[in-house]
Length: 314
View 1 (cartoon, rainbow, N blue to C red):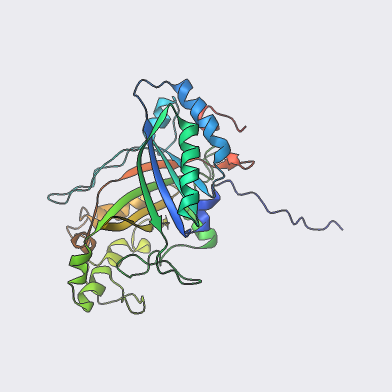
View 2 (view 1 turned 120 degrees about the vertical axis):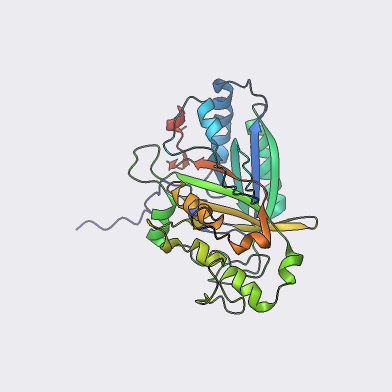
C-alpha cells in the first residue's frame, strides 16, 4: 500500500495574503517614470522584479493602467470608483504598481524596498511609502486599531477565507489571484477621545472593553454598516489592515482582498449612504485620503504567474 505523500500542496495564491498580519510592513506605491515608457520596458522591469517576489515577504499588485499598458486584460479589474456623496468626499487615487512588504524589522524592509526599487528602475519610480505596524497584538487574537478596537474580528478563516479572498473557476493565470482595495485612513484621535465611552462603542458597534457586538447600536454604527452577512449576496472579504503613523499623523491602512471587487463596493456604498442615506459613523472620527485597486497575480512554481500579462514563469 502506497504511503500518503507528506509534500504540502502548493497553493496558487501569494501566501502572504493568507498568512495574516506581520509585525511591521511597508506599502510601496510605484508609478511609471514617464508616460512614454513602452510595454517592452515594463516587461523587462517586471522580469527583474519577479525573482524578488516570494508572495510571502513581498506581495505585489498591479493597477489597471499597468495591465492596460501591457496590452493585457484581467476580467473584473477596473479603476477605483468614486463613492463620494454630497459633502462626503471619497478620494480616488489610481495606482500603477503596489508592493506590500512584510517582516519583523523596518531596517530589513528598507533594504528590500531598495532592491525592489532598483529592479524596477528606470521604468518605475517610487511615488509613496507608508510604514505600518501591528498594534497591541494578542496571541491567537487580532491586532488593534489605534482607537483601541480590535480590527478584523469578522474575518473569514480557513477555506472560507480562501473562498473570499481568491479568484477561482476563471482559468489558468487567474485562479489564485486576488483583487485588493487599498485605502489610507487618517484618524482624528482628538475627536475620538472626546467621545464618552458609550458614544465610542456606538460609533463602532462593539464594546471596547470586551469586543462584544452591541445589538442596540444605532444603524450608523460601523459594524452594522459593514456586516458582511447582511448583504445579498453576502460580502465577505479578507481584511489585512494595519495601523500607520508619520510624525503626529496616524490612522489605518485599510487593505481588503477579494475574489473580485464586488464585496468591497457593496460595503463602501452602504458606508457612504448610497443605499439608504445613512452614513457610517466612522466618517466622524476618520477619513480616507486615498483609494486604489490592484490585481495580485497568482503564484506558480514559487514565482509570480504573469502569463496573463504575456510573461511566462522564469
